[in-house]
Length: 223
Image 1 (cartoon, rainbow, N blue to C red):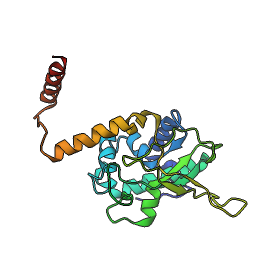
Image 2: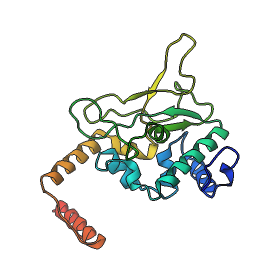
Image 3: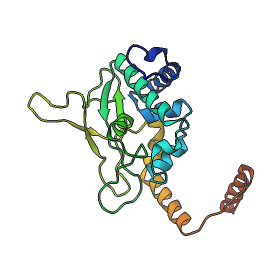
Image 4: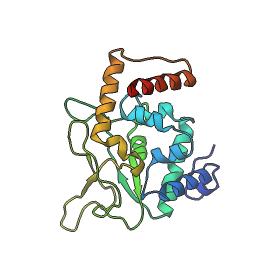
């Protein structure tokens, strides 16, 4: 398979799928992320992304449903496509979700943690016309310890006229995921993880059994 370059990437079989994924993401928001692109291409599930964010999966590529060569190919096509759209790149620091003691724990995308590949996965792309002071996106929630969101340097002309650098929130939360970051929901997730770790859980053999068990809990709550 030939290496993708600026002259051939639009002829690649993955190019139409990347274009459709980007169009779908931009129809609902202003930020395109590699993770969202893989999700929209049905190569990565939202459930696996969540498990990775909580540190239950050691590195994201482990649950992307294609070969490592193909993931790198898609990342290159994405970068070239958003460049044609004049989108603004911004490096994002991905940190582990959940309770912690000590400094934030960075997450890993690739098995070997290759710096260039890690950077490719963590690079977000902002819609043209947005700037770091007027990004149309929801405010960043604090983490479960009440800490403010991580910050990252913009990698495009981040030095201002005064010679200083501009920091932007590192984690961009889509509108349809804000519910998950609500303090009440975070408390429920923490309680569930504690119950699971302590063995306070119920196993079922099929989706039907799981639904029946959930229905029985609803009936108990009504009495």
